Length: 269
Image 1 (cartoon, rainbow, N blue to C red):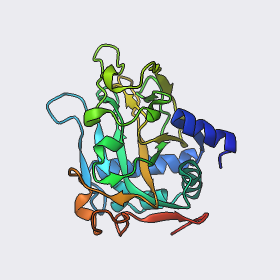
Image 2 (image 1 turned 90 degrees about the vertical axis):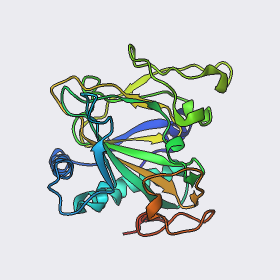
Image 3 (image 1 turned 135 degrees about the horizontal axis):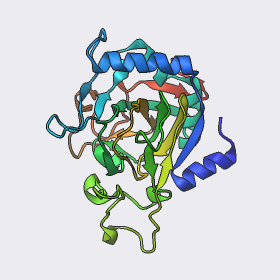
């Protein structure tokens, strides 16, 4: 659990490194299951599995959406008691549901970039922008193998138009349209190394991205995008998860594919 000071830090900065939630052996087993899903050996299918960068780039970011649908161990992961409890603290709501989970695996040497962005503009069927992502490293995420970078305070600057911030090819720095940002903001980049088995949290409007993995070590991780219990289905554009929505526009987003994982101080399993 976080202290009040740590919760304040998260709400001010937009991200925070959490504690170890898995042993090395547990992280290794999740990593093995991840490769099984990516390579087509799982018993069930995830919602989506693809190279996020396409097959013509020579770079690979293996994206899997809702890996929990394809593997029971990842289903257990979305209910991880420590992660859910800390997420509820950071969000400040007694009910936490899963919007969806996501793998973005960067293989050794050919792992591609994830350009600078905010999450919520890519989720144009849910409101408000109060979600928190729990990103768990299944091996050490380091500067060498393409760990995430964050921009402190950026979640206070509002949604960036178009859902994109822009990325310099040469320096991997954000290249935003300064006219849409508050006057006087300071864009500071913080590399966020996450040790194996540890979890990092970030707000859905915090600017983040990760460069290529040119090392000899992969960068496996599982992110779960958690939403507060008051999140509504408000579609203005499409999303891969929309076909799983069973409620009407304006209603609370809940249902089989958006499980409640935390309620009133306990795991809702």
